[in-house]
Length: 388
Image (cartoon, rainbow, N blue to C red; front, side):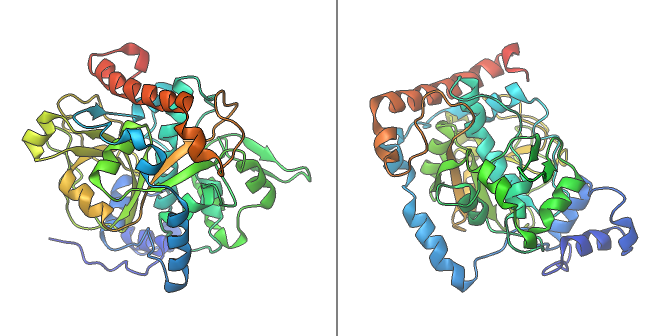
């Protein structure tokens, strides 16, 4: 029996209160459980919003200002073909509990998805010494920037905010203080910090935005095809995807979840298996989604040739991925600047295409892509260095 879609147009707080029996006083005792989050989204809560007419031109201009994946990386076409790739492994090396904590406590799925996608590039650069690993990236400053205090956002909006022309960027988990003595403590993710983020009408403080702009994504690349999806992951870029697809909370024996119901939801895609086994078993490649609900599902196995999945992850079929991409709100978060970078020059979008096409940078990304494929093989064989 499919649950009634009675939370369409309902605030997250009211939806959660209803799930808990309709008593608002129950709302603030604890954060939502994974089961409650699934119920809220399954019954129609809209964690993502579709663009209103006056913003469609802005979105198209934004997309038009970004290169396609193969314009930026013309030599990457086909790079992931036939491979099992798991760029999340670098992140698990630094942070073995990623996926199992920092579950959303309100309707903030779009920034969880956007930040989880960005973490792929950041962690892979840190793993190979291109930047310093400073800990998790913060979600709350991005959500606070919305300009309104309700819940729900599009995938393009947080991507635009942290992208080359946006007002902000990524912070890492620590306490921040302004010259005038204002402070925000992001050391730990909590209901309190997400409640701060939810007060979006006030926007993100200007002094904090200025700090965050030191760590932007150089490109936010729209992903529209399965080939782009596969090759973006081969390069180590996570993909933030907004869609109406829902999935089962239990996987099959190979870690794949079936499409079931519908969620107005954003989730990060962080791995792909394009091997002959996947094509034989599922009729095409399969991709891994990292949910933002913590330990919400039962993982009954993993794909042949792929390493262990993080808590909350699951694979889906190419048919489902293609359907999600056709909703036209999917972006690879590329070239997150990071901290104390070694190889990149100062942030420069004008000359970026030239920079990424020069031999040194091409070699770096080609080597990184080869290493990502090798890491999956090493992890599959039980390499303890990867800490999974």
